[in-house]
Image (cartoon, rainbow, N blue to C red):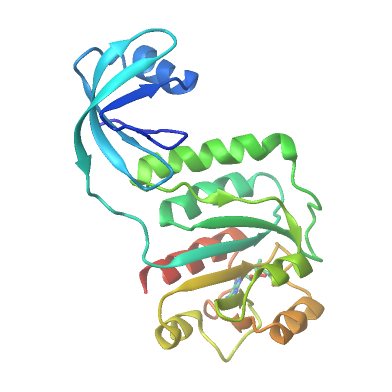
Length: 238
Ligand code: SAM
């Protein structure tokens, strides 16, 4: 069944009007769906419906409700990925993989050792498109929120001592991420991943002073993007 993200809230599921040009093009030109065909629509509220195409024109597609779908693939834990900016376009790859895993937010962080010192705002739309497509593909209902880039200090201030705040650090030998998860239960996790050159000692000290716990992902030193996916997956599935 083809799934589509309805970019605003579906007010009346009995009669849904699709006006998003890209979605209309995909339905009519790419998939060549016709009157009477079925498709699934989900919106940002987490609702998903099976609908039937009633009317098709170049500017709008009107669908009627067949049934509300009660599939929930969202995680029962909120993961906020605080990802230091990386070289080249690893962030695109990361947005896709973190979305598949089910993170709630992706917050780009400019930490001391970042080679890339600012987010290319022209690419913000691209990141959002990648996130939307990965949400559709993975069966998710709530595309992760891609936030504006912040400094490391600003990122720390966005966390709360009530949350589980973890900073992945390859020099950490005591606390393993997995053990922390078993100890602290499942609620809201803020997960910090460093850049290719890792976090500075100043950043690790500042993190500790602000109730972020350095955690290890094991003895091997992982690439930042690998560490992000491994950490998110462990949090999502432990
Ligand atoms: N500075 C390190 C070095 O040059 O050996 C490498 C940093 S690593 C490539 C990038 C980021 O991935 C780190 O800042 C950390 O967040 C995460 N990371 C990689 N391996 C890790 C491990 N074994 N345990 C915890 N975090 C790890």
